[in-house]
Picture 1 (tube, rainbow, N blue to C red):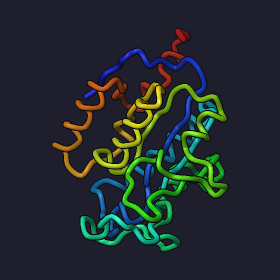
Picture 2: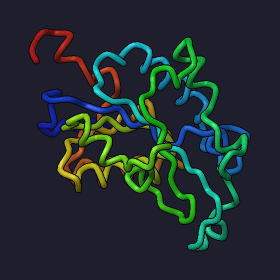
Picture 3: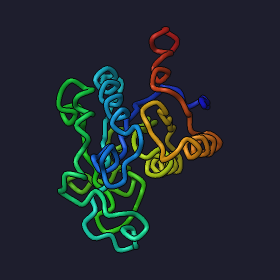
Picture 4: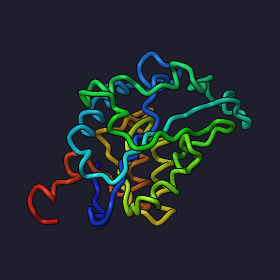
Length: 210
């Protein structure tokens, strides 16, 4: 599914890469099918499109001691500092370099809760994602990652609630199931997000129609 509300490319944009971590990719505690492939494709896209973004942020679950039964609802995963919480190395393989060299901020979330949205997290200096976006005068965000129907969707919803234009990059995201992906994309599109593939993200610039 693709939809294109009038989000446009005007104004500074940020790329938010949500929870592309070892525990959410193949072999992880909460693996999402196709997670490694998505990670590689995100890295490839970032290597090619970095110049378009005023800010690139990764978010990571970084659980220390969730207080809201998160580890009852889900198996233990992405424990702070553990290999499972680390970014998937396929990101760097796709980018052709250390992906963190292309990232401005790494936001950690869920330290003491099961918060899903990247907007609940903070970077190493304690800055919330919303503050980072405001500091860079970001007007729109492109969001991708894992899982599309859970943390990616929550981040898109919060971006829209903050008054930002939001685009879900479907080919750079993977959901827990095909049915979940379809339902999520319909919901986000009806809420005002653009649901597109990454190849369309800057198509108008390529044709000189920005």
